[in-house]
Amino acid sequence: MDSRLNCTTVKEPIRKLDNRSDTGGNRPLRLVVAALILRAGEPGTEVLVCQRKPDQPMSLKWEFPGGKIEPGETAEEALARELNEELGIEAVIGRRVSRVRHKYRNGGAIDLQFFVVEEFGGALENRIFNDMRWSPLGELMQYDFLAADLGLIRDLAEGRLL
Ligand SMILES: Nc1nc2c([nH]c(=O)n2[C@@H]2O[C@H](COP(=O)(O)OP(=O)(O)OP(=O)(O)O)[C@@H](O)[C@H]2O)c(=O)[nH]1
Image 1: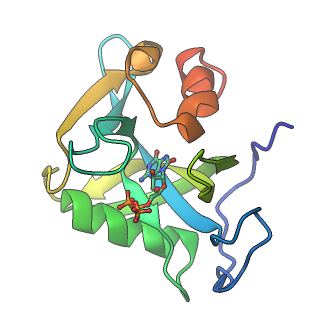
Image 2: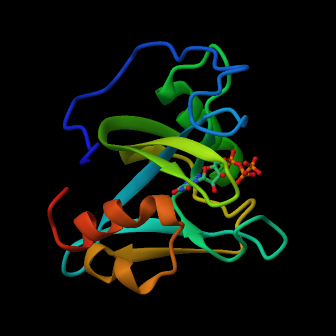
């Protein structure tokens, strides 16, 4: 099933999902937001990619900055908070370009939404990642990304999404 959405910014509040167990197993579905932070590169657009630390689960995998939505937050509020915590920036959250559900082998399931960020205040600072790089969209397949991100990575690399 292709679960990507082509819609504009989503403002609905996020439901509280405590005790929810409709994802198989008894672990709650985690609602996650992540950012495609874009800049003009040479010759084309570049996106910020981040590497998880060696001591984290799924260590050294690459991902997009972001994290879990807290109860009461909209997706955009959560993403702005995470980007401030992780990168020290004040981001303007743009349109949502993709949404996917993924079940990891350890039983954890995530609902992952990706938003474009083309504007932010402050200087990017790596506060939590092992490494952080600007990647041309066409080179994204060279990074070892988290499994939930792979469909998006392919679409971005093949110029189908942006
Ligand atoms: N930020 C981010 N998280 C992602 C991406 N793809 C993906 O599967 N995830 C998963 O979504 C979850 C994000 O939660 P988080 O950033 O708040 O927490 P975390 O890595 O410390 O994991 P944990 O709290 O579940 O142990 C993680 O389980 C992470 O593996 C992505 O591109 N960006």
